[in-house]
Length: 312
Image (cartoon, rainbow, N blue to C red; front, side, top):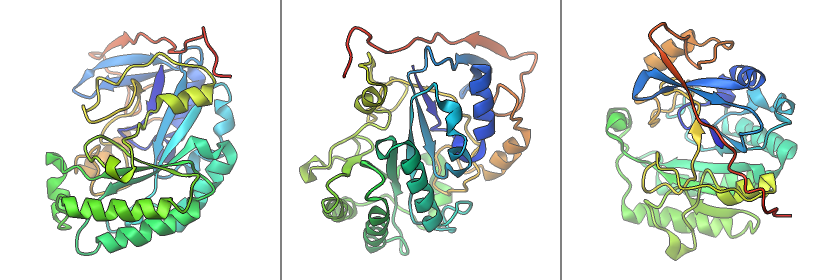
């Protein structure tokens, strides 16, 4: 099985010690997002975990302890934008995050660190021209340290509209998307070792030779583990998502990066800070502890490896 760590929060940035404790204990407890009293016990045994996909904007707290994952295969989805403190108010500077990206890439291999330029949004300050310059600058910094860039365009979910509306961030026009994409493709074409993909099928840029990619990527996982896997499209994701099946071990409303557009915070920044206070690095739950009325059920876990064949 593939472990997603996590679409719901930034585990490498804020909860890495908890994660390594869960690896040591061999399991994690994950509440159902729609019914928190129903809790899944998820095995983290190397025998059933084929690959771990980390999602982060700042993996610096985790990098020096990655030797603890010597029995696991993994890669990182590393989001690196250039919005600054106004929209991403708790992140280190862009230059520091570029340095962190390079350090991680040098440690684990450039194929295992995916650059996400996501979400792309616009207003008077963050114009098309802003994105053209910012993307080109970051791409130049990462040109020798990644093999793929995933583009994501902002989704105006109902629960973030008030937050983004305060910055006059409106849905992107077709013309803006096209102009941005053309510029980005021109930039990436100067770095032949980097593939440019979109994150979902929602924005179709195939006419610009920008395919719709996968964040939890079957081909990349097979390449990393050296074995084919029998994996289906993830039925728990949106229809526009191409990702293969995975189990997410994160908890919503627990990330402290402070990104105003974040769908996982839902605009509840005070709740995230409150939840962080309930975090115990020794608990099997990311936030808080088990209660007497919680119902814990063991999640069926099995490897997706097709051991009849080898890729090498």
